Amino acid sequence: MSARTVMEAYFDAFNKHDPEGVAALFAGGGKYVDPAVSVGIKGKALKDYLRGHYVAFPDASYRLVRAVADRNGLATCEWRFKGTNTGPLGDSPATNRAVEVLGASFVQVKGGKIAWLHGYYDRRNLLKQLGK
Image (cartoon, rainbow, N blue to C red; front, side, top):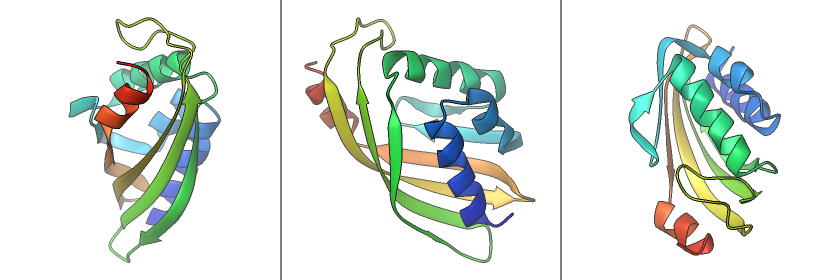
């Protein structure tokens, strides 16, 4: 699979709220990084993180705004996240507020699997929308 195809499959599984499907796209040592997990996570930790995300935002959806990929397995995209915080987010109770955040991801694909994915978004803006 091309880097672009893998990246699109990643967002498709994310939007289906399928932690197993998302994790299956990563290579054995493939690592996921974003502002909330800056040290990076993989395997079971990634699945648990995603489950928590879907509890916090049961209506979570990501829309690809634009995406590009090269012949060396590197893909990048801009995305828009929308969701309503109706479940606990970490140690914080639900705020019942809707959020919309623009972000970007960089994905390295090797052998049809994600070797690493780094996602970026304005965490401060997200927390502000949540009233924190």
